[in-house]
Image 1 (cartoon, helix red, strand yellow):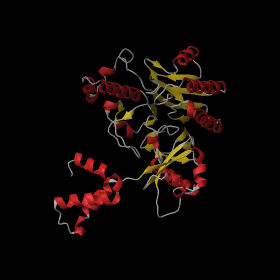
Image 2: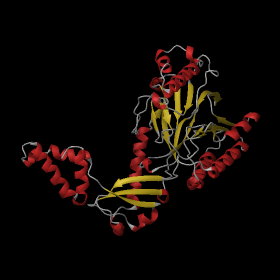
Image 3: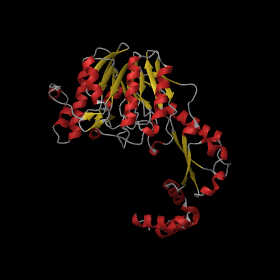
Image 4: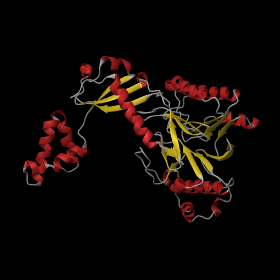
Length: 404
Protein backbone atom coordinates (compact mmCIF):
# COMPACT_ATOMS: atom_id res chain seq x y z
CA UNK A 1 0.00 0.00 0.00
CA UNK A 2 1.08 3.56 -0.73
CA UNK A 3 0.86 6.08 2.12
CA UNK A 4 0.36 9.74 1.26
CA UNK A 5 0.56 12.00 4.32
CA UNK A 6 -1.13 15.31 5.14
CA UNK A 7 -1.73 17.19 1.87
CA UNK A 8 -3.16 20.53 3.09
CA UNK A 9 -3.76 21.41 -0.54
CA UNK A 10 -4.08 25.01 -1.69
CA UNK A 11 -4.13 26.59 -5.18
CA UNK A 12 -0.66 28.07 -4.66
CA UNK A 13 0.97 24.64 -4.27
CA UNK A 14 -1.67 22.59 -6.13
CA UNK A 15 0.12 21.89 -9.43
CA UNK A 16 3.48 21.00 -7.92
CA UNK A 17 1.92 18.91 -5.14
CA UNK A 18 -0.42 16.93 -7.40
CA UNK A 19 2.36 16.30 -9.93
CA UNK A 20 4.53 14.86 -7.15
CA UNK A 21 1.69 12.60 -5.94
CA UNK A 22 0.86 11.46 -9.48
CA UNK A 23 4.52 10.65 -10.17
CA UNK A 24 4.80 8.67 -6.94
CA UNK A 25 1.71 6.57 -7.75
CA UNK A 26 2.79 6.07 -11.37
CA UNK A 27 6.26 4.92 -10.30
CA UNK A 28 4.61 2.23 -8.14
CA UNK A 29 1.79 1.24 -10.45
CA UNK A 30 1.86 -2.33 -9.11
CA UNK A 31 0.45 -1.03 -5.80
CA UNK A 32 -3.36 -1.06 -5.96
CA UNK A 33 -4.12 0.38 -2.50
CA UNK A 34 -3.70 4.14 -2.08
CA UNK A 35 -4.16 5.50 1.43
CA UNK A 36 -4.56 9.25 1.85
CA UNK A 37 -3.88 10.20 5.43
CA UNK A 38 -6.34 13.09 5.91
CA UNK A 39 -5.92 16.85 6.33
CA UNK A 40 -6.75 17.75 2.75
CA UNK A 41 -7.81 21.28 3.71
CA UNK A 42 -5.08 23.92 4.05
CA UNK A 43 -4.46 25.25 7.58
CA UNK A 44 -6.04 28.63 7.13
CA UNK A 45 -8.47 28.38 4.20
CA UNK A 46 -10.91 26.10 2.43
CA UNK A 47 -9.69 26.12 -1.18
CA UNK A 48 -12.56 24.66 -3.18
CA UNK A 49 -10.69 24.79 -6.51
CA UNK A 50 -7.68 22.87 -5.17
CA UNK A 51 -9.87 20.32 -3.38
CA UNK A 52 -11.83 19.81 -6.60
CA UNK A 53 -8.61 19.11 -8.52
CA UNK A 54 -7.67 16.53 -5.89
CA UNK A 55 -11.12 14.91 -6.11
CA UNK A 56 -10.71 14.62 -9.91
CA UNK A 57 -7.46 12.80 -9.32
CA UNK A 58 -9.23 10.38 -6.95
CA UNK A 59 -11.70 9.60 -9.77
CA UNK A 60 -8.88 9.07 -12.27
CA UNK A 61 -7.18 6.50 -10.06
CA UNK A 62 -10.51 4.81 -9.38
CA UNK A 63 -11.02 4.39 -13.14
CA UNK A 64 -7.55 2.85 -13.34
CA UNK A 65 -8.62 0.13 -10.89
CA UNK A 66 -7.02 1.49 -7.72
CA UNK A 67 -8.60 1.04 -4.28
CA UNK A 68 -8.59 4.41 -2.49
CA UNK A 69 -8.96 5.10 1.22
CA UNK A 70 -9.67 8.79 1.89
CA UNK A 71 -9.62 9.51 5.62
CA UNK A 72 -11.06 12.48 7.52
CA UNK A 73 -8.59 14.62 9.48
CA UNK A 74 -9.16 17.36 12.03
CA UNK A 75 -8.86 20.06 9.31
CA UNK A 76 -11.42 18.33 7.08
CA UNK A 77 -14.63 19.03 8.96
CA UNK A 78 -16.75 21.97 7.81
CA UNK A 79 -19.08 22.19 10.79
CA UNK A 80 -20.66 18.73 10.97
CA UNK A 81 -19.72 17.75 7.41
CA UNK A 82 -16.62 16.08 5.98
CA UNK A 83 -15.05 18.15 3.20
CA UNK A 84 -15.74 15.37 0.67
CA UNK A 85 -19.13 14.51 2.17
CA UNK A 86 -21.04 14.53 -1.13
CA UNK A 87 -18.50 12.17 -2.66
CA UNK A 88 -18.65 9.95 0.42
CA UNK A 89 -22.45 9.56 0.20
CA UNK A 90 -22.34 8.90 -3.55
CA UNK A 91 -19.65 6.24 -3.47
CA UNK A 92 -21.15 4.52 -0.44
CA UNK A 93 -24.28 3.88 -2.53
CA UNK A 94 -22.25 1.93 -5.07
CA UNK A 95 -19.87 0.30 -2.57
CA UNK A 96 -17.09 1.29 -4.94
CA UNK A 97 -13.31 1.32 -4.82
CA UNK A 98 -13.23 4.73 -3.16
CA UNK A 99 -13.85 4.75 0.57
CA UNK A 100 -14.29 8.11 2.31
CA UNK A 101 -13.71 7.19 5.95
CA UNK A 102 -15.26 9.27 8.73
CA UNK A 103 -15.73 6.56 11.37
CA UNK A 104 -13.82 3.39 12.38
CA UNK A 105 -13.46 0.90 9.56
CA UNK A 106 -11.87 -2.57 9.61
CA UNK A 107 -10.56 -3.77 6.23
CA UNK A 108 -8.37 -6.56 4.86
CA UNK A 109 -5.58 -5.07 2.71
CA UNK A 110 -2.87 -7.21 1.14
CA UNK A 111 -3.82 -10.02 3.52
CA UNK A 112 -3.49 -7.81 6.63
CA UNK A 113 -6.18 -6.60 9.00
CA UNK A 114 -6.20 -2.80 8.94
CA UNK A 115 -8.21 -0.63 11.30
CA UNK A 116 -8.83 2.97 10.21
CA UNK A 117 -9.39 5.48 13.01
CA UNK A 118 -10.03 8.84 11.31
CA UNK A 119 -10.60 12.09 13.15
CA UNK A 120 -14.15 11.88 14.51
CA UNK A 121 -16.27 14.66 15.97
CA UNK A 122 -17.78 12.28 18.52
CA UNK A 123 -17.87 8.60 19.44
CA UNK A 124 -21.53 7.81 19.89
CA UNK A 125 -22.56 5.23 22.47
CA UNK A 126 -25.40 3.96 20.30
CA UNK A 127 -22.79 2.81 17.76
CA UNK A 128 -20.64 1.14 20.44
CA UNK A 129 -22.95 0.35 23.40
CA UNK A 130 -20.32 -1.82 25.10
CA UNK A 131 -17.83 1.03 25.59
CA UNK A 132 -18.86 2.07 29.10
CA UNK A 133 -18.92 -1.54 30.29
CA UNK A 134 -15.45 -2.39 28.95
CA UNK A 135 -13.26 -3.12 31.98
CA UNK A 136 -10.42 -0.60 32.25
CA UNK A 137 -10.12 1.45 35.42
CA UNK A 138 -8.03 4.27 33.94
CA UNK A 139 -10.40 4.92 31.03
CA UNK A 140 -13.47 4.58 33.24
CA UNK A 141 -12.11 7.32 35.50
CA UNK A 142 -11.51 9.54 32.47
CA UNK A 143 -15.09 8.98 31.29
CA UNK A 144 -16.40 10.12 34.68
CA UNK A 145 -14.70 13.52 34.38
CA UNK A 146 -16.33 16.61 32.89
CA UNK A 147 -13.50 17.18 30.43
CA UNK A 148 -14.77 16.58 26.89
CA UNK A 149 -11.39 15.61 25.42
CA UNK A 150 -10.56 13.22 28.28
CA UNK A 151 -13.88 11.46 27.75
CA UNK A 152 -13.24 11.23 24.00
CA UNK A 153 -9.70 9.87 24.51
CA UNK A 154 -11.03 7.23 26.91
CA UNK A 155 -13.64 6.09 24.38
CA UNK A 156 -11.05 6.10 21.60
CA UNK A 157 -8.68 3.84 23.55
CA UNK A 158 -11.55 1.54 24.51
CA UNK A 159 -12.43 1.29 20.82
CA UNK A 160 -8.87 0.27 19.99
CA UNK A 161 -8.87 -2.20 22.90
CA UNK A 162 -12.01 -3.81 21.53
CA UNK A 163 -10.82 -4.10 17.92
CA UNK A 164 -7.41 -5.39 18.98
CA UNK A 165 -8.97 -8.03 21.20
CA UNK A 166 -10.99 -9.36 18.25
CA UNK A 167 -7.87 -10.09 16.17
CA UNK A 168 -5.93 -13.32 16.48
CA UNK A 169 -2.95 -11.88 14.60
CA UNK A 170 -1.34 -8.49 14.03
CA UNK A 171 -3.54 -5.45 13.56
CA UNK A 172 -2.36 -2.41 11.59
CA UNK A 173 -3.95 0.78 12.93
CA UNK A 174 -4.05 3.86 10.70
CA UNK A 175 -5.14 6.74 12.92
CA UNK A 176 -5.30 10.54 13.21
CA UNK A 177 -4.49 11.15 16.87
CA UNK A 178 -1.61 12.07 19.15
CA UNK A 179 -0.04 9.83 21.79
CA UNK A 180 -0.19 10.64 25.48
CA UNK A 181 3.04 11.69 27.19
CA UNK A 182 5.69 10.70 24.62
CA UNK A 183 8.49 12.84 23.20
CA UNK A 184 9.09 11.46 19.71
CA UNK A 185 12.33 11.80 17.67
CA UNK A 186 12.68 15.28 16.20
CA UNK A 187 9.45 16.55 17.78
CA UNK A 188 9.40 19.64 19.98
CA UNK A 189 5.93 19.06 21.43
CA UNK A 190 4.55 16.41 23.76
CA UNK A 191 0.80 15.76 23.99
CA UNK A 192 -1.67 14.36 26.51
CA UNK A 193 -5.11 12.77 26.64
CA UNK A 194 -6.53 16.30 26.76
CA UNK A 195 -5.30 16.73 23.17
CA UNK A 196 -7.25 13.66 21.93
CA UNK A 197 -4.62 10.96 22.23
CA UNK A 198 -3.98 7.25 22.20
CA UNK A 199 -2.37 5.55 25.18
CA UNK A 200 1.41 5.22 24.96
CA UNK A 201 1.04 1.56 25.96
CA UNK A 202 0.10 0.78 22.34
CA UNK A 203 3.59 1.79 21.18
CA UNK A 204 5.18 -1.45 22.37
CA UNK A 205 2.23 -3.77 21.83
CA UNK A 206 3.56 -6.93 20.14
CA UNK A 207 0.54 -7.36 17.84
CA UNK A 208 0.02 -3.78 16.68
CA UNK A 209 1.52 -1.69 13.87
CA UNK A 210 0.65 2.00 14.02
CA UNK A 211 0.59 4.55 11.17
CA UNK A 212 -0.42 8.21 11.12
CA UNK A 213 0.29 11.62 9.69
CA UNK A 214 -1.02 14.54 11.81
CA UNK A 215 2.45 15.43 13.14
CA UNK A 216 4.18 17.08 10.19
CA UNK A 217 7.73 15.82 10.77
CA UNK A 218 8.20 12.17 9.84
CA UNK A 219 9.80 9.62 12.18
CA UNK A 220 9.71 5.97 13.25
CA UNK A 221 9.37 4.93 16.87
CA UNK A 222 9.01 1.33 18.04
CA UNK A 223 5.94 0.03 16.14
CA UNK A 224 4.83 3.49 14.96
CA UNK A 225 5.40 5.16 11.58
CA UNK A 226 4.53 8.85 11.39
CA UNK A 227 4.49 9.75 7.68
CA UNK A 228 4.65 13.51 8.25
CA UNK A 229 3.19 16.00 5.79
CA UNK A 230 3.88 15.90 2.05
CA UNK A 231 5.22 19.48 1.85
CA UNK A 232 6.44 22.24 4.17
CA UNK A 233 3.15 23.99 4.85
CA UNK A 234 4.52 26.83 7.01
CA UNK A 235 7.76 28.56 7.95
CA UNK A 236 7.72 26.57 11.20
CA UNK A 237 8.67 23.46 9.19
CA UNK A 238 12.19 24.58 8.37
CA UNK A 239 14.94 21.97 8.03
CA UNK A 240 12.43 19.14 7.69
CA UNK A 241 12.38 16.49 4.97
CA UNK A 242 9.03 15.40 3.52
CA UNK A 243 8.32 11.95 2.15
CA UNK A 244 5.89 9.50 0.60
CA UNK A 245 5.87 5.93 1.91
CA UNK A 246 5.28 2.41 0.63
CA UNK A 247 4.57 -0.47 3.00
CA UNK A 248 4.05 -4.00 1.71
CA UNK A 249 5.32 -7.54 2.22
CA UNK A 250 8.75 -6.46 0.93
CA UNK A 251 9.20 -3.87 3.68
CA UNK A 252 8.91 -0.15 4.36
CA UNK A 253 10.19 2.31 1.73
CA UNK A 254 10.65 6.08 1.93
CA UNK A 255 10.67 8.51 -1.02
CA UNK A 256 11.41 12.22 -0.56
CA UNK A 257 8.63 14.32 -2.13
CA UNK A 258 10.75 17.29 -3.20
CA UNK A 259 7.65 19.53 -3.39
CA UNK A 260 9.32 22.40 -1.53
CA UNK A 261 11.76 23.06 1.31
CA UNK A 262 12.43 25.71 3.94
CA UNK A 263 16.08 25.62 4.99
CA UNK A 264 17.59 27.75 7.75
CA UNK A 265 21.28 28.04 8.61
CA UNK A 266 23.84 30.43 10.08
CA UNK A 267 26.18 32.42 7.89
CA UNK A 268 29.84 32.15 8.91
CA UNK A 269 31.59 35.44 8.04
CA UNK A 270 34.97 33.73 8.26
CA UNK A 271 34.17 31.65 5.19
CA UNK A 272 33.22 32.40 1.60
CA UNK A 273 29.77 33.33 0.34
CA UNK A 274 27.40 30.37 0.27
CA UNK A 275 27.38 28.41 -2.96
CA UNK A 276 24.92 25.95 -4.52
CA UNK A 277 27.03 23.03 -3.35
CA UNK A 278 27.02 24.33 0.25
CA UNK A 279 23.22 24.24 0.38
CA UNK A 280 23.21 20.81 -1.29
CA UNK A 281 25.64 19.60 1.37
CA UNK A 282 23.46 21.02 4.13
CA UNK A 283 20.47 19.18 2.67
CA UNK A 284 22.52 15.97 2.71
CA UNK A 285 23.14 16.48 6.44
CA UNK A 286 19.37 16.83 6.94
CA UNK A 287 18.89 13.59 5.01
CA UNK A 288 21.28 11.83 7.37
CA UNK A 289 19.41 13.17 10.39
CA UNK A 290 16.09 12.14 8.81
CA UNK A 291 17.38 8.61 8.28
CA UNK A 292 18.48 8.43 11.91
CA UNK A 293 14.88 9.24 12.97
CA UNK A 294 13.41 6.71 10.53
CA UNK A 295 15.66 3.65 10.79
CA UNK A 296 13.05 0.96 11.36
CA UNK A 297 9.46 0.45 12.42
CA UNK A 298 8.01 -2.66 14.10
CA UNK A 299 11.46 -4.22 13.67
CA UNK A 300 11.41 -3.66 9.87
CA UNK A 301 14.31 -1.60 8.42
CA UNK A 302 13.26 1.41 6.34
CA UNK A 303 14.71 1.61 2.82
CA UNK A 304 15.36 5.04 1.31
CA UNK A 305 15.13 6.19 -2.29
CA UNK A 306 18.69 6.22 -3.67
CA UNK A 307 18.35 9.49 -5.61
CA UNK A 308 17.10 12.64 -3.91
CA UNK A 309 14.42 14.80 -5.53
CA UNK A 310 15.75 17.92 -3.78
CA UNK A 311 15.75 20.95 -6.09
CA UNK A 312 17.07 24.41 -5.24
CA UNK A 313 14.42 26.13 -7.38
CA UNK A 314 11.74 24.92 -4.92
CA UNK A 315 13.79 25.90 -1.88
CA UNK A 316 13.50 28.96 0.37
CA UNK A 317 16.68 29.65 2.32
CA UNK A 318 16.65 31.61 5.58
CA UNK A 319 20.18 32.82 6.26
CA UNK A 320 20.97 34.14 9.73
CA UNK A 321 23.53 36.96 9.42
CA UNK A 322 25.17 39.45 11.84
CA UNK A 323 23.58 42.47 10.13
CA UNK A 324 20.71 42.78 7.62
CA UNK A 325 22.48 44.22 4.57
CA UNK A 326 20.27 43.35 1.60
CA UNK A 327 22.36 45.68 -0.56
CA UNK A 328 25.34 43.41 0.04
CA UNK A 329 23.71 40.07 -0.74
CA UNK A 330 26.71 38.82 -2.71
CA UNK A 331 28.79 38.65 0.47
CA UNK A 332 26.27 36.16 1.91
CA UNK A 333 25.43 34.07 -1.17
CA UNK A 334 26.90 33.84 -4.64
CA UNK A 335 24.81 35.25 -7.51
CA UNK A 336 24.46 31.72 -8.86
CA UNK A 337 22.88 30.53 -5.60
CA UNK A 338 20.61 33.57 -5.39
CA UNK A 339 19.32 32.83 -8.90
CA UNK A 340 18.93 29.11 -8.18
CA UNK A 341 16.76 29.44 -5.05
CA UNK A 342 13.03 30.04 -4.93
CA UNK A 343 13.72 32.73 -2.33
CA UNK A 344 16.57 33.92 -0.11
CA UNK A 345 15.71 35.75 3.11
CA UNK A 346 18.02 37.20 5.71
CA UNK A 347 17.44 36.89 9.44
CA UNK A 348 19.49 38.68 12.05
CA UNK A 349 21.53 36.50 14.35
CA UNK A 350 20.78 36.95 18.05
CA UNK A 351 22.86 35.80 20.93
CA UNK A 352 21.56 32.43 22.20
CA UNK A 353 20.60 32.48 25.87
CA UNK A 354 22.81 29.46 26.60
CA UNK A 355 25.84 31.26 25.13
CA UNK A 356 25.18 34.30 27.29
CA UNK A 357 24.86 32.16 30.40
CA UNK A 358 28.06 30.34 29.49
CA UNK A 359 29.94 33.60 29.30
CA UNK A 360 28.53 34.71 32.64
CA UNK A 361 29.55 31.43 34.25
CA UNK A 362 33.12 32.12 33.14
CA UNK A 363 33.13 35.40 35.07
CA UNK A 364 35.87 34.23 37.43
CA UNK A 365 38.51 35.03 34.82
CA UNK A 366 37.32 38.63 34.97
CA UNK A 367 38.23 38.68 38.68
CA UNK A 368 34.81 40.03 39.64
CA UNK A 369 34.63 37.93 42.83
CA UNK A 370 31.09 36.74 42.08
CA UNK A 371 29.23 39.77 43.46
CA UNK A 372 25.75 40.36 42.08
CA UNK A 373 26.60 43.93 41.10
CA UNK A 374 29.65 42.74 39.21
CA UNK A 375 27.61 40.14 37.33
CA UNK A 376 25.08 42.77 36.32
CA UNK A 377 27.81 45.09 35.07
CA UNK A 378 29.42 42.23 33.15
CA UNK A 379 26.11 41.47 31.46
CA UNK A 380 25.47 45.12 30.56
CA UNK A 381 28.99 45.63 29.22
CA UNK A 382 28.77 42.45 27.19
CA UNK A 383 25.50 43.51 25.59
CA UNK A 384 26.73 47.05 24.89
CA UNK A 385 29.85 45.72 23.20
CA UNK A 386 28.30 42.96 21.09
CA UNK A 387 24.90 44.49 20.33
CA UNK A 388 25.14 48.28 20.57
CA UNK A 389 22.17 48.88 18.26
CA UNK A 390 19.94 46.46 20.16
CA UNK A 391 21.12 47.28 23.68
CA UNK A 392 18.02 49.27 24.69
CA UNK A 393 15.76 46.35 23.78
CA UNK A 394 17.86 43.84 25.71
CA UNK A 395 18.01 46.17 28.72
CA UNK A 396 14.21 46.57 28.77
CA UNK A 397 13.71 42.81 28.57
CA UNK A 398 16.16 42.12 31.41
CA UNK A 399 14.48 44.78 33.55
CA UNK A 400 11.11 43.07 32.98
CA UNK A 401 12.73 39.85 34.18
CA UNK A 402 14.09 41.70 37.25
CA UNK A 403 17.65 40.83 36.29
CA UNK A 404 18.71 44.51 36.09
